[in-house]
Length: 104
Image 1 (spheres, rainbow, N blue to C red):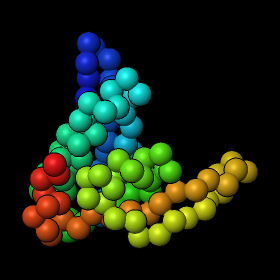
Image 2 (image 1 turned 90 degrees about the horizontal axis):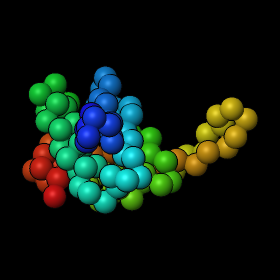
Image 3 (image 1 turned 45 degrees about the vertical axis):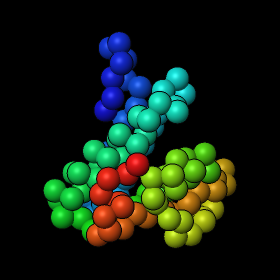
């Protein structure tokens, strides 16, 4: 979790099997490099857990941010949640490569 002036501005969590379960950056903190820093911390934790990959279900708006730090699209999906059809991407990052261990 990232906090500025006693206010949470972003968070990311790592579930079992390298799944990035939650990822959020407040609009006021977008473009600040916070997303990259949180992904870097998630990479470190995943490496500590001996995970070989990270993976996520990214929204259409989150997909470019995940792509920018090295995640690749596995597939585009359409899921029904609360009677609404939502588009998302399943994405993954191979942690066995040097590039994945230190996002730019």
